[in-house]
Amino acid sequence: MPSSGPDGLQAARAQLVGYGVRLLADGLALGSAGNVSVRVGDIVAITPSGIPYADMRPGDVCVVALDGTELAASETPSSETPMHLAIYARYAGAAAVVHTHSPEVIALSASRPELPAIHYAITGLGGPVRVAPYRTFGSAGLAAAAVDALDGRSAVILRNHGAVTYGRNLAQAYDRALLLEWLARTYRMALSYGEPATLSAAELDEVTAETRRRRYGERR
Ligand SMILES: [Zn+2]
Image 1 (tube, rainbow, N blue to C red):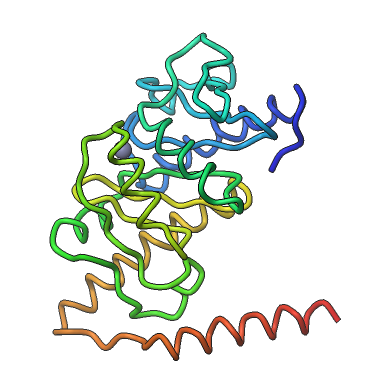
Image 2 (image 1 turned 90 degrees about the vertical axis):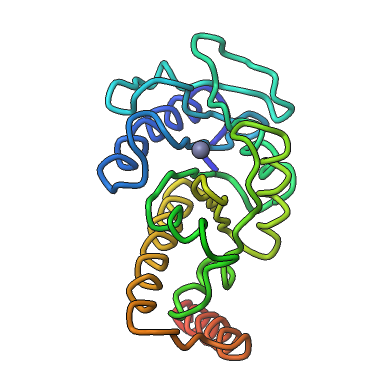
């Protein structure tokens, strides 16, 4: 989480503009679709509604309290602000949220109930990623559906809509969005050969345990 105070907030606004441009460059959203936020202490900096990322400036980034009160009213906060705030409220480990309209996860969401584990890297998202039921964009219902489907995960796919990831900072949340899109693409490719083999819960648990062991080893 960036430090609170004016410097931290200013840094967060600049960072959000940079990641907005990356959403376009990486094919995770078009125009002004999708949205990105960072929690800075007790406030949340979030990309505005309707401004193309290519034209966005740090001063356009909106600031809201955790209860949704607008603290800087130059632009209208993203329509998905309720979903971002619901994630910060439910998951203490969330300090940044990335919402994409990326094509591979949208394609998957239209026909599958979840993204299964066909590659062990999915443990980086907590395991197979659920597809939350369809709800109208910007609604409290969508926020609730996304938060519920995130249980035990750091990523969720929104049916006929897109995806959401969170992380301890924006870099981690964004890397997870890229990983999710890569896993969805890889799954689609695997389906072209027939029904793919998937990893069991026990195999995924062993990956998670091995990752922890290696991290612990590196510190010593
Ligand atoms: Zn959306």
